[in-house]
Image (tube, rainbow, N blue to C red; front, side, top):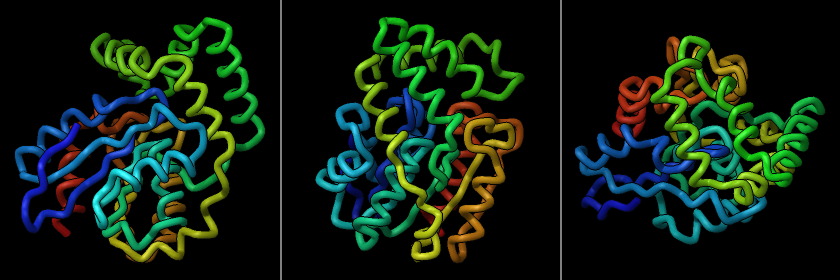
Length: 239
């Protein structure tokens, strides 16, 4: 999804997470378009490493831009901050972490990869969904349909590539202090995949970072609390 550049407005690149598409940012994209902010949503379906994801994004992005990464998109954003920090004018890290997997997380990813490769992709999505949303939203049919629709668009093959990229991600914590651009760290209050303490850890390590916890939201804050996330992104872009 692209919008033409508006003079004097910083371009924005949005980076979706695992099993997500541009529909994750539908509310934010509508608001950005109304604000005249030029933006596009990065392609996260064709590569198998954070380095390759970052290279593809940088090849398409403007010379200098604002960067907002959600979950796996945050891992990609941190890789860009390692390799091309001069390109990024502002950084937003949404429901993500700077830490690598612990062994239990890696083992679960490998098991889900095996399920996807064995033709049980629907079961993979079913396992992810309860961890994606706040407990009160688990039985929300519209939210479940959105997650399943995004997953169907991603597909099993791209999902496996994404998981392999996540498995290989480095510990980004030692580089957080090097981030010098205005940074927003946002996390859902009930995020069980990248909980608030991991967001607080990143915000504390990045000089001047703004840290915001979204009340009542799980991991999918952009769709569980779209108005709050949009307001925070607007504040970050305008700051």
